Length: 442
Image 1 (cartoon, rainbow, N blue to C red):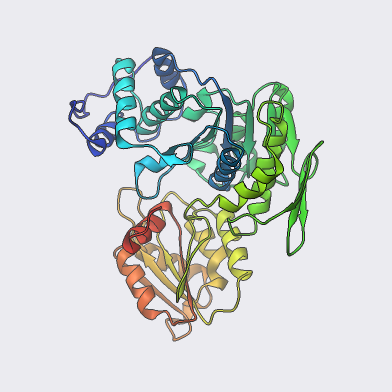
Image 2 (image 1 turned 180 degrees about the horizontal axis):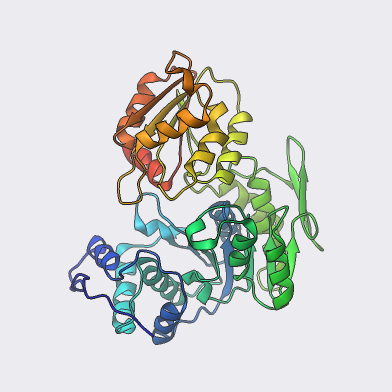
């Protein structure tokens, strides 16, 4: 059954801009998140939505954005016409949709919003469902060879899962979004595994996947490619190599994306391309060039200058552990300052534990909105989990709360010496706020 919401705004008129449309979409449905495919499938049928190209869907707890960026970049270097859908955005909604490497325009999005609005009738859609349908319809009309679609949340009931993947990738399975997906890796793995399809390549880059994922793939007859079994990588200081079921790619330069997990993500992307080589053949030079050019913002992004600034959207324990390892692999810095802001539905305590030994000075920011956590709450948690914090602020270690990201950032910049580094993490919102302050494009 479709549902309606009587408290939403009036539909935008013909002169309305993108911001007016996005405000309208936020008001349409009584819940910001309502997992389930029934309503979005009904609307897709009304739109006669069809994607006549190779469809790659990417899910996972962490690593989705990096893997999507690598796939897009490699396929573009191979000469294909490619659509990329990712979420959330950092600064502008338009970042969620790219066609042939270009961010889509306001006008292109508004045209699709009008089409979805006209087709949905009394079907109540969430912001994510409505915008997903609009972007999929845009891709369907853009004469593409391939689309790369990032799952928003989970897999089984995420709006992206109305599309049957020709190849599906799960990058990692860890604890996040427990209110929606369950509190164990087994439960979360099963939710994510539902993007796999019978008889189609199902890539899993998690080195130790939950049994639930492996069993679901077997139960539906998916062609499961497991890291360490069906594909792998190896490397030295200068270069690395990929080995798949039948394909070897040697003498590869390291990806532009920095960090300990990027070869795992890159090998998952190359496994997907190997599994699709009959439909999307990719020459070696396109792989080399594509990996060098893929660089989504906010994934261990290092800004030049002094002090060194590192931006990372890490917001769960698994991502924090990877960030901590990446910081450990950098050169010496006298002090490390953290600008952190988190949402209250995240496992902030464990994130702080994973990062504690790498941070000398904490600048804890309050994030706005109903889900935002107060900086004072982060300070309280640090006082519980950090031995260094318990003895109070000193020249070598301090923890302070701030009303917003801007004031936390300002304090960190003021306190940091020339050889120090500042790491900004905890949420897309935290990284976006600093990018905005710096006047940088995401």
